[in-house]
Length: 178
Image 1: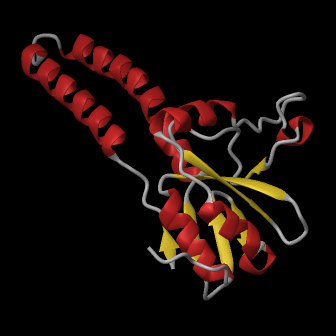
Image 2: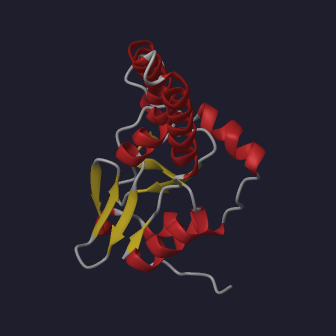
């Protein structure tokens, strides 16, 4: 069983700043200016929500888990049978070099699969992005594998090596020794 944990640092930082600012405003404004203090807190909440949109979308569209017992690779909202994953493509992805952080950011900007003509992966000849998202979140690495039918798939991951090693073990692909 492999489950990729999503980082929570950004979410905790944003919520902490929001709570600290609301607590400070409450301490300074209550009881004289309770109404305006609540209005400003609501406005700050409107600023907080877009800051939490990316972590929430990562949790919905790019959560990874491999369950060899059930024979399922789960990526976001999609479930892919492990029997349909080509072990040779997993081995090849495991042998390929990891990108540097700067290269990862640049690659994630170009890995788009939006349901808009011209931005679909199939229109551009790129691998289909698995999970239901429209693109790889900035800074996440993406892994390209194939199904046994030859369909190229792109999967966003936080830990490329751990994910590919677990997928290789689950599909029976050779795992290089460290």
